Amino acid sequence: CCIFAAFLVVTRPQEAPEKVTYPPMVNAVLAHELTDSQARLLAANGFAVEADVDFDPASNWATIYNLSKKYNLTLIGKIDYITVPDNFTLQQWTQTVQRAVTDFGDIVHIWEIWNEPTYPEYFKGYYDGSVSTYTEMLKAAYQTIHASGSNVTVIGFGGLQLYSSFQPNPFDTWADIGLRFARNVTALGGMDY
Image (tube, rainbow, N blue to C red; front, side, top):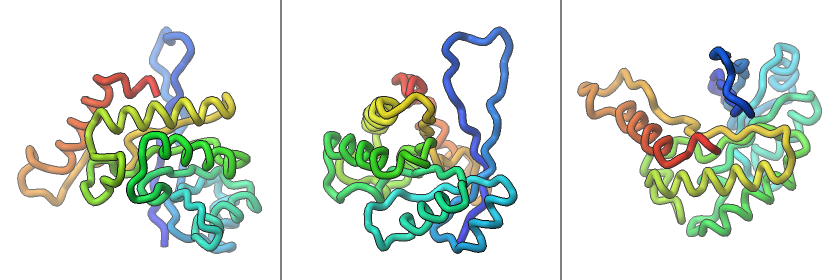
């Protein structure tokens, strides 16, 4: 039901720090479903929950959202291929992000943009898997989310493979693809979002 993960939440400082400081880690569980007892246990141990935003009231997201609210859990909302219609446009992407923030921003203050952006099976609608498209979507989401309030964090590169132990050729792995993708998004200014 759940995958345990730790997320490093990075916020951009207003001024360059004199020395390097590292932001706090957010101990989180990636949840595709969640029970009342699991939510209570996570809350008692200071864990956050990450889940895919879904507007269907019968979805697992609705349960996870309600349990997070009930137990005051930090909820990380993932907006991606599950959240958007099949043939979405950039304008529809922005509208979807706005709807997520409007509907769930009362408790979601950390938003992940597009899980596993290098996996071809998750290329959908406007998102064609290219670095430039991802950067445009990241920028649109960042601007929309930050317009709603100042105490929010946007996470890019969620689920990006930066290590692979199952590929026989270390130079032709998902990790290599992930590193190149991250470098290229960064070169296009993606770290500004």
